[in-house]
Length: 251
Ligand code: IPE
Ligand code: MG
Image 1 (cartoon, helix red, strand yellow):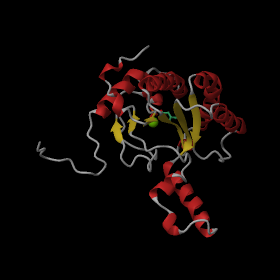
Image 2: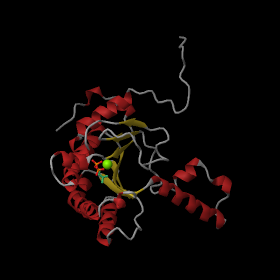
Image 3: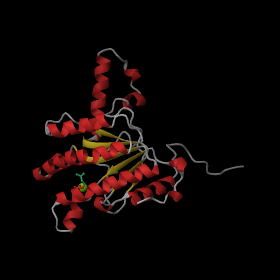
């Protein structure tokens, strides 16, 4: 399916879109299916959305696929999500590579609860696609933003302790470079499906000036057309980054 891009301003494409994939469980419940069926259905929605991002020309997409808080779910669901992450990567990897997508992972990958094979597949996918730059597709997996910020602070503290840098060298830019993916740009637009209006520990640092979109549909029903609509709406917003807007214009 090709998108009608005529309503889009090519000069104001968001550089980075964050996706909080929410509502898979409710989608399944509404059909009398197990929650895992909702996650399976959510895969098609994610990759249709990635296709849309490629057509629109978005350079970075970060998808929240597993949060550090998701470990508290039913063990069967957690086990399914671990398996599914790995399965999805291996099935999608070659196609994404052929499309010029760089697959990246943000999160605590050292967590012993992540199965080794899963960790290995993430590493392989990242290595295979490392030379691509049409779209950076970041899987926020075992990701929590507060933890990411604390880890960055620790890295910087160690560098100060070892005499590599002075405390005054810790600037916003230097801090940003200490996060999981040093070159990740600020997130311009965060979309959370399912009608929930929460950030849930996602990209807190990167979202300093993000715009938000909360489509009231469950994630498995989301597709590239919804992405396009969110981007068009984003383009109509007036982003001032803390600056003032002239109330009166004198020609
Ligand atoms: C999102 O859907 C999937 C994950 C991030 C794992 P949910 O599993 O949160 O679905 P609901 O919110 O229970 O409907
Ligand atoms: Mg949820």
